Length: 423
Image (cartoon, rainbow, N blue to C red; front, side, top):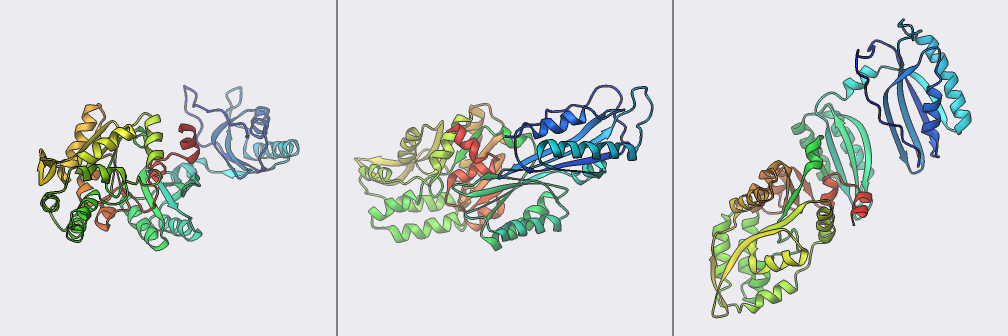
């Protein structure tokens, strides 16, 4: 690995001379140890007056190094003015040749307006995450065009993961959030990829609690549909479920209608259904990784506590909230006990769990797929629609249509390597 340049801080006292000419030194070629050290060691010997480092960016892509350093001349030792553009350019050109000979890299020098570079980065920056399996060139090209169309500039691109999905993070400056999201949503629809947009800032990495919906999010399928099948009412209940998830019916009304269809089922059926639950691919990886990173993890479900409580215990979750089926004489009565966890109830549960652990709502994440998840998704600091209905995708902060739940980690900005290290 190429040695990294040390972090540089501005000295105290008078601000640097912003009018002094700046120069961009670019180093490219096959990566090898010692290149960065060789360049900065050479810069130490720029006489008769020293230079200061204004900006540094470095990346290694499949063994190829690209290192850019912007420097400008400081005041002379006697307090006089810098010796001049032409003189420093000549000195840096000689230095470039020496570094190239010593390292075998290509080294170029050109004039640079460092202030213009800062102007390009003006405006609230965003992270744009492009995910797919695979990510076709059309998706990246479309995202780049959309960003440019709304006045944004791509400042950096890095790969977050190559498995189970490929994902790239673009750092974008100079674009309005709403315009950027709208333009990129069109790209996602046209290319079959997922595109998430988040504002750059400390809040992204300050998330500390995640709440997951259960049916069709943490697990595949809908538990109530499985129960209805055993009661011989599958088609009827499936129609009600679909209408509720699409926001066409009041959730509590639809829930009570579906539960009523289960009247008479032996309570042992609940154990049978729970034993046959299939976790969504990536669910364990997501939970395990976030737990090791210090997250509080839990589930909030419009389903039933007789299913979700044992599931939460098996996964080692911190909390769970769901509806409770009424049981009498070993059979389901067709009724519910206690408070109904509906659309508003899910948001209340999120707030309750966040308060329990002293975590502000802006530091929480919620993941769900149905209309009854919308209040919870909107209340969280980051709401993620996972293989969701259109009405949910349109209103969530980010939408994933990949079959892997651990793709949530990339939306949070974690790389595949970081996930492996946390495993």
